[in-house]
Amino acid sequence: MGAGKSTVARALAKRLGYAYLDTGAMYRAIGWKANAAGIECNKENMEKLCENTTLEVTLSEGEQVIIVDGMDITAEIRTPEMSRMSSIVSAYGPVRQYLLKLQREAGSRWAKKYGGVVIEGRDMGTIVFPDARFKFFIDADISERGRRRWKELREKGIDVELTETIQKIEERDSNDKGRSLAPLKKAEDAAEIDTTGLGLDEVVDNICRIIQSSQVKN
Image (cartoon, rainbow, N blue to C red):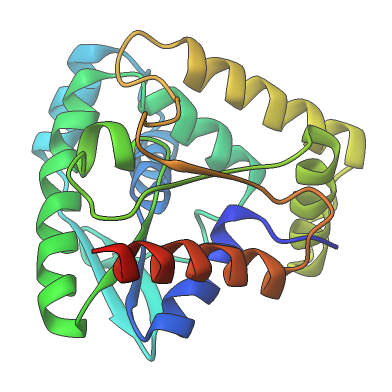
């Protein structure tokens, strides 16, 4: 089984001795709260929800912890439904504005505290950190991405069908690429890494070679 972008980002951070920040988890957190409260997703409701939400992202023994209104929901947001909800709420301006500030604050704070940070997210290189020194656009064949996600969910005890998992990934990609606000796209100065058929160490090695090559040139 190959390596997905989350696995790659986590492994790269470990290799470099940096912190790892998964910003997608923050959108899942907002989706979780909206879902738990039974709130209809529209601009007005999302603005009110963000105004009344305290979202904290911390590290515990190197692992990211998501706390919403004082409650640790790290495990609760790792379901197919929360993946779907994250894509829905990410289309609303108030949500993106609220999380943009938190993401930039966390990225800056963690970079200083840990010497560097590997940040994963669908608009990191284009919107949130456009001046990041290194940017990578990680992609793979949709079938392989589906198998990776299906295996990950099954290992967590979540019973899902492979075909359904692939379909949901395709739907999320379509939603994220087609939205008018911060659509999913490759930053012009990002290095594209196709992980299809590659193992985790191979992908991380490729990224590290690009980083080292750039440092030598500079």
